[in-house]
Length: 104
Image (cartoon, rainbow, N blue to C red; front, side):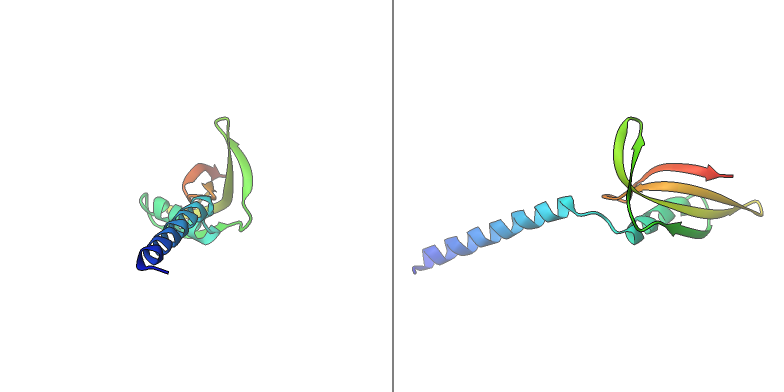
């Protein structure tokens, strides 16, 4: 095998591996733990939080006519000496907050 064929084969192998990696990353969901960290960072911008939880199994929700695969969780914040609880839905692919509901 000549050196030109070897370089060509190595280049094609690299390109195929790169394309495969990009496809796998595009379809990969974020873990519930990573989604919770992202949500907590968002809530911490508004003040300290005292607790949080998240369901490990994603569910399908509808928001504004669009369907999402999302994790359901909650965050507790202490505001003016009272605990306020919020439930959230975070996108299972990106971890972005889709919806927040104040629990009563």
